[in-house]
Image (cartoon, rainbow, N blue to C red; front, side, top):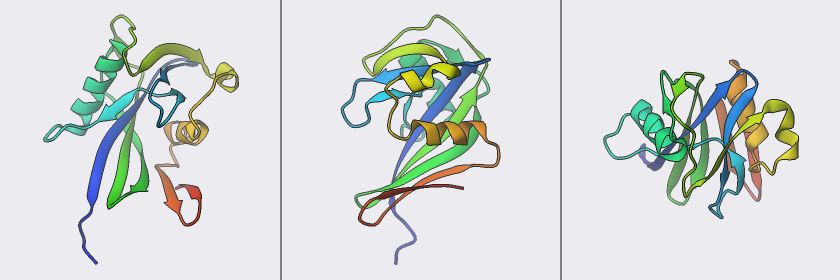
Length: 148
């Protein structure tokens, strides 16, 4: 068995202020609903630079000192899809939306009233709980979530 596999690298970032979190209502068909902003890491780009760039592109905000707080991963054809999960409460600028989706500050108490992406609440646990660092999907005949 090879020690190497194809990997697709992406980021998500929870930008927050007190009980408010910044969410994007995604327009892409592959993962619809409200979730955190983020996107792909470009070739030779650092992970921190990628999350800073992606948040700027999707929200208009400049973020500072994003903290790596976990990893989400799932199998893809011939490899693995890895999402580096960052969070920060340090930002400035004017909030804007992008073609990726509308940006909105949401009070945590109002999350249940939104059409969230399917795995949002599990993602939120990784962002919030310092004892959980990994969100892993495994697949046999169906998809299974493992938080570690």
